[in-house]
Image (cartoon, rainbow, N blue to C red; front, side, top):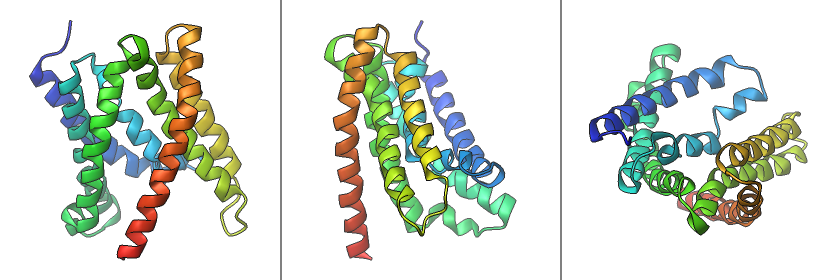
Length: 209
C-alpha cells in the first residue's frame, strides 16, 4: 500500500533534518576516508532516491525528495552552530540558498528516478543507473585527486568505496542480472555527463566570483 500525503511529507521533513544534522556529525567524528561519505554529493543524491524507498507516486516522490534535500541544508548549518559554535546566519546565507536550489533540482531528478527504478522497461534501467552514476562520477573525481601530490593520501580508498557503493546499489535495486548489467552500462556515460556538468558549473561559479 502506498503511503499517504501526510506520511510522505513527514518522512521528507524528518529525513531531511536527520540527513543534514547527522551529515555534519559524520564528517567531524569519523576518520578519513570514511568521513568523506558525509561530504558527498553522491550520498545526498542517494538520499533523494526517495521514490524507491517511499514506494510513492512520481509527483509525490519528486516533491518529497526536493523537500528532503532543501531541509537538509539548514539542518547541516544548524548542527554546525549548535556543536561547533558557527554563526546561525549561515542558515540563510546566499551560499545556503544556492545549495537549496541544487537540492530542488537533484530532488526532482533522483526522486523521479527512484520511482522509475520500481517500474519497468527503459525507465527502470535509467532509474537504477542514476544513483550508481553519481557514485561513479565521484570516484572519477577522487581518482583525479589521488594523482595530485597536494591532496592528502588515501584518495584511492575513496575511489574503491564509491565504486563499491555504486555497484551495491545496482545489485540491491536492479532486479534481474540483465537489468543490473544494463544499469551499470547506462551509469557509466551518465557519470561522464555528470562529471562534465560539475566541471562547467564549477567554472561558471569561479568566473562569477
